[in-house]
Image (cartoon, rainbow, N blue to C red; front, side, top):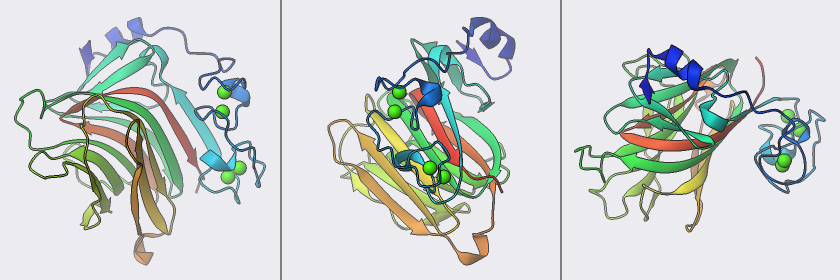
Length: 257
Ligand SMILES: [Ca+2]
Ligand SMILES: [Ca+2]
Ligand SMILES: [Ca+2]
Ligand SMILES: [Ca+2]
């Protein structure tokens, strides 16, 4: 276990990078050849011939870049780690976040057209662990130009969270360029121990987010991007707030500016 600032310890614990010759989704196609390395049995539709199938391409009409981070043994590859949370290797994945603070993984790209799929299991959290937080959240941010430690300039984002004060405590929350959007679908179910996939898509016209968890119906919503913000580009980030998640993989599909 280590905290930000103990990079050296983390490096020592890091095993060799998993080869592209592994088959993480078990569909018989090795990661390096797989048009969606995290989705088994995806469609083979690939209109723009960029090697990314339509099922995980941010735009299958325009060539995109696909980047798969298989977080085996805690390896986050080129994702930048930030915040006070704990990163701990847990089997093949990484435990990201802490119940006290906010933790982030940041992909420093310059794009306004981004798809992010995260394979996660929610673990310890400040609500169920009695740490006194009123909510816990897992967030995916895109186009946030700064992502400063004080949480300014967060850009477009969605959160999968839980607020126990509400009758349906689970929620999706959206913010456009850091401004709260009233759309906030709610759902039942625990926040701890859930295994699922967060999909966040940001195009110049729309932001959508979907939470697909085992044992419940998918929850999805979105909002149209304000025209004055359409040309905005920036980084992508994954955050946890008062919550620890086991992160198994991250898939990014995006277009360079
Ligand atoms: Ca595969
Ligand atoms: Ca696949
Ligand atoms: Ca494609
Ligand atoms: Ca594409």
